[in-house]
Length: 248
Ligand SMILES: [Zn+2]
Image 1 (cartoon, rainbow, N blue to C red):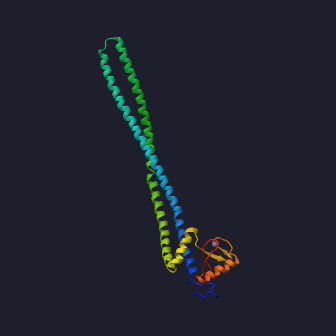
Image 2: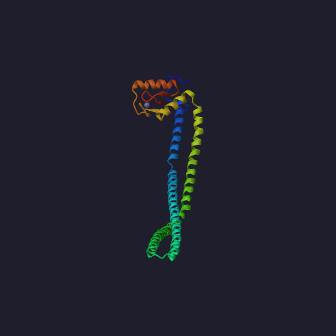
């Protein structure tokens, strides 16, 4: 036990020192976790993945349109074929017709069928033309797939490398943290963890008359109190203003 009367200047390995060292490790681990989330490699992977997703959506849209156009072509061809058959029947009928009025009606019907075929032909031609243009576009589009997929895997590997390095560092700190915490009592650790959870920083230093956690000055009487408290508890007191553990 330290003699309270002439103690105040803590040397190494006091509770205060150990707490500061645990806090230093925790802060470093927090910074690493933060850096891990904000890696430029993560942004690059997100950008490359977004580009690939856009590319895939465009490919799907083009393929869907190609299918639609194929449908149009098939439908117009089938309808034209039906109309052609109908017209063959009308032509056969025409040969047997005697009454001029009936012949005229048939002629009119056949002309209507011809118009319908023209309309269908035009629609088919338009679909074929669009398909041909789209086919070229799709071929060009597909040629960029490999490059985009490569970019994603390169970015993915880079992110894995970067996070791997940080994870190894965090693991190393975890070991250090465990060893540093082993040096402290359960009561002190429980208090440290509690204050850290509520205030972010659990241990502050007394700099002159000021707590560097809350940046408030302590009165002369408070200074005397925390010095007494620190002397009897291995260099640690409570900041009367913010409740942080005050290392003296
Ligand atoms: Zn304070």
